[in-house]
Length: 205
Image (cartoon, rainbow, N blue to C red; front, side, top):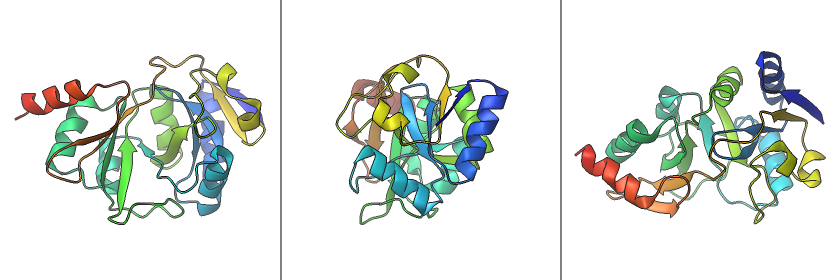
């Protein structure tokens, strides 16, 4: 396992590992993530195996809102939430447009997408092709790491590279909301509260 710093050289190296089909641990604004190329089915299979997550869906990090629009249909509700909270700690589950091999989706083809509010992560995702699988870098059911020191030896021994940017700014997972119906459904309340979501929607009509 290679460990790199949170600088231009480290970000470039991490993106190259992702493009070559590797699995990395990297920081976001929320917690440290376990990532790979979502178009690479063997890489995504490794991530699922490392986490012991089964077939539960995992989100995709996008380099910007334009990439998110190409991946899913945000719809009216999703667009309002994206404008209010992106870049930031909100994962929006919406109908899938782009195929990402190896990622399990529900029967109606939904996918969670997020634009993180951490510049090194955005640069990493952009350099890796605009999209990156981004699930928390912990074994399923365990606490998500807020710093490289909290990434367990089990995870470290299973990955190709770790990008060290120190402690994350929020230290709490993103809120996950589903916008596939006419009302939002909060799947997981994280850094953004349900009240804040509804207030943002009311403010935007």
